Length: 108
Image (tube, rainbow, N blue to C red; front, side):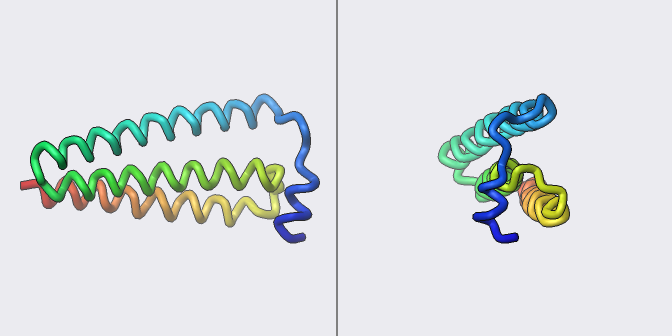
């Protein structure tokens, strides 16, 4: 089944669990983007490259969560794609946290 076929079989009304997933993900995205903005503002004020690494780390974590949520809804929460969705989310989050850790280690 390709992406178009999976998107066509999407249900019209999401379940309570799907709505809770969307709400918590959106809260995470807003909080993460707030952290990105704060890190960029700190970079502008201090010119420390660690703040750029911090903002990149939070951006990757947010991108993973957003991509996973969007894909899950497009695919109709089809269980056959769960491994791919988890891999994308885990990969983005892992690299995001590696950048956050790097920003803490290289902070001057």
